[in-house]
Image 1 (tube, one colour):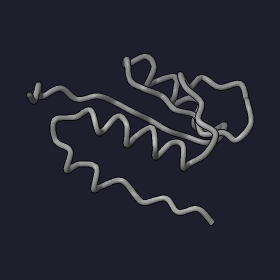
Image 2 (cartoon, rainbow, N blue to C red):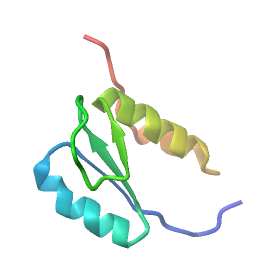
Image 3 (cartoon, rainbow, N blue to C red):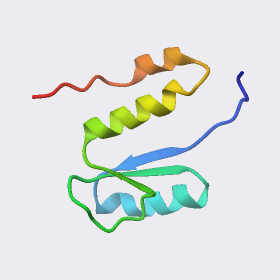
Length: 79
Protein backbone atom coordinates (compact mmCIF):
# COMPACT_ATOMS: atom_id res chain seq x y z
CA UNK A 1 0.00 0.00 0.00
CA UNK A 2 1.17 3.57 -0.64
CA UNK A 3 2.35 5.40 2.47
CA UNK A 4 2.96 8.79 0.84
CA UNK A 5 6.50 8.83 2.19
CA UNK A 6 9.37 10.36 0.27
CA UNK A 7 12.93 9.10 0.49
CA UNK A 8 16.12 10.77 -0.62
CA UNK A 9 18.80 8.99 -2.63
CA UNK A 10 21.95 10.58 -4.04
CA UNK A 11 24.60 8.93 -6.21
CA UNK A 12 27.88 10.49 -7.19
CA UNK A 13 31.22 9.51 -8.64
CA UNK A 14 33.85 12.04 -7.60
CA UNK A 15 35.20 14.34 -4.93
CA UNK A 16 32.71 17.10 -5.75
CA UNK A 17 29.89 14.83 -4.50
CA UNK A 18 31.27 14.41 -0.98
CA UNK A 19 29.43 17.46 0.44
CA UNK A 20 26.16 16.16 -1.03
CA UNK A 21 26.76 12.74 0.55
CA UNK A 22 27.21 14.44 3.91
CA UNK A 23 23.97 16.41 3.52
CA UNK A 24 21.97 13.38 2.36
CA UNK A 25 23.29 11.34 5.29
CA UNK A 26 22.24 14.11 7.71
CA UNK A 27 18.71 13.91 6.27
CA UNK A 28 18.58 10.10 6.75
CA UNK A 29 18.77 9.55 3.00
CA UNK A 30 20.72 6.97 1.03
CA UNK A 31 24.10 8.02 -0.39
CA UNK A 32 25.77 5.90 -3.06
CA UNK A 33 29.33 6.41 -4.25
CA UNK A 34 30.14 5.05 -7.70
CA UNK A 35 33.87 4.26 -7.83
CA UNK A 36 35.62 1.42 -9.66
CA UNK A 37 38.32 1.35 -6.96
CA UNK A 38 38.02 1.55 -3.17
CA UNK A 39 38.29 5.21 -2.13
CA UNK A 40 37.62 7.14 1.04
CA UNK A 41 34.10 8.56 0.78
CA UNK A 42 31.27 9.87 2.92
CA UNK A 43 28.82 7.80 0.87
CA UNK A 44 27.09 5.10 2.90
CA UNK A 45 27.58 2.52 0.16
CA UNK A 46 30.07 2.12 -2.68
CA UNK A 47 29.19 0.59 -6.02
CA UNK A 48 31.86 -0.32 -8.56
CA UNK A 49 30.16 0.89 -11.73
CA UNK A 50 27.20 2.73 -13.19
CA UNK A 51 25.79 -0.66 -14.19
CA UNK A 52 25.92 -1.72 -10.51
CA UNK A 53 24.19 1.55 -9.56
CA UNK A 54 21.34 0.87 -11.98
CA UNK A 55 20.99 -2.68 -10.67
CA UNK A 56 20.80 -1.36 -7.09
CA UNK A 57 18.21 1.26 -8.07
CA UNK A 58 16.17 -1.39 -9.89
CA UNK A 59 16.22 -3.53 -6.74
CA UNK A 60 15.10 -0.58 -4.61
CA UNK A 61 12.35 0.46 -6.99
CA UNK A 62 11.08 -3.10 -7.34
CA UNK A 63 10.15 -2.91 -3.67
CA UNK A 64 7.75 -0.03 -4.34
CA UNK A 65 4.05 -0.57 -4.73
CA UNK A 66 4.18 1.14 -8.12
CA UNK A 67 6.34 -1.11 -10.33
CA UNK A 68 5.65 1.01 -13.44
CA UNK A 69 8.28 3.42 -12.07
CA UNK A 70 10.92 0.94 -13.21
CA UNK A 71 10.31 2.16 -16.77
CA UNK A 72 12.01 5.45 -15.90
CA UNK A 73 15.44 3.92 -15.25
CA UNK A 74 17.84 4.05 -18.19
CA UNK A 75 18.85 0.81 -19.80
CA UNK A 76 22.49 -0.22 -19.39
CA UNK A 77 24.23 -2.05 -22.21
CA UNK A 78 27.56 -3.85 -22.06
CA UNK A 79 30.09 -2.67 -24.63
